[in-house]
Length: 145
Image 1 (cartoon, helix red, strand yellow):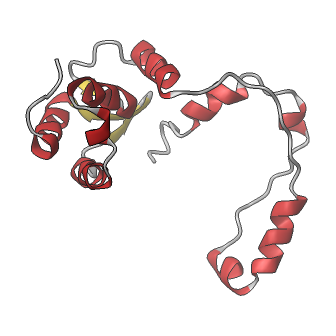
Image 2 (image 1 turned 45 degrees about the vertical axis):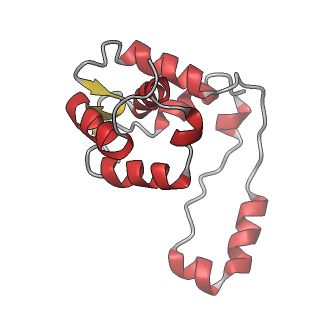
């Protein structure tokens, strides 16, 4: 993650918009356990997790469609670069779903996109040309209209 942009907060911000005040005030800072503690003292780690406060609230459902809508509002053109969810919707418009969700296809897409997706002000993005190259390289020409 690029620390200057903090895009990992994007999806969680959507959920936290409806959080009650106690979601912020009742939580004590809990630093992650170092790797050595997770290996050498797993019981301590489990107790710390169980002791941390749990706050629940109703939030709007997050779906790929709602994330796509958010991405479209932040990056409406999509002609220069695409967010990951925009890329997924483009793939879904071109190829049958049963083909896209095959493990070997997902693994190939992951491998080919690795290093091409970068952090920008509103989140992650891939250049349009790189997306097209990966899509055709992994899946071939579009199968759906």
